[in-house]
Amino acid sequence: MAVAYYSIRIISDQNNLNNVSKILNIVPKNNRLTWIYEVVCNDESPYYNFINEFLDILENKYEELSRIGVNKDDISFWFLYEYNNECNMEFIPSDMKRLGEAGITLCISCFKTGSYIEIPQIDI
Image 1 (cartoon, rainbow, N blue to C red):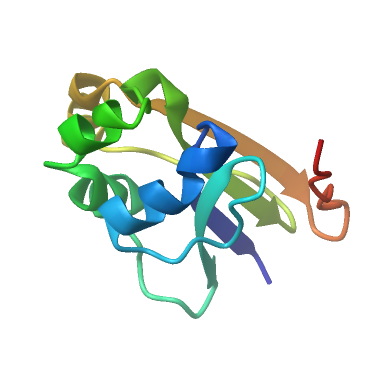
Image 2 (cartoon, helix red, strand yellow):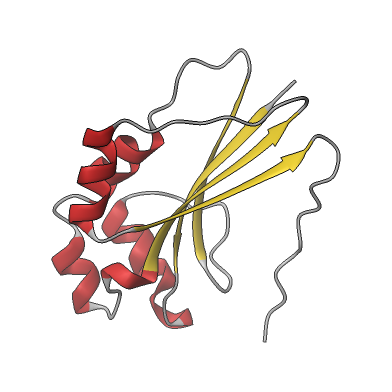
């Protein structure tokens, strides 16, 4: 079974990570070194348009985030995809245009089922 992990990751000063949660009104998966909100989908999950869903979360929040020191280049969307046989993906132009206009980085990582090892974050 293929699994997809979609996340918003925001790099911020350690003291601001709780403020990010308040501004976005989301409880993150992790906010120790990087603020991370994650959605996990499998083969039975309905289609999840993570680019638009995540941009909807951030829309109209950039100014508030900027006031606490979070700039658009501190924000990235991650798509980690666990596959069994073949790894293919496509993105529609309107989603990519919206992402580009927002100035958000898209990171994609594909890995064979069973080979992904989550590296724990260590407090510094």
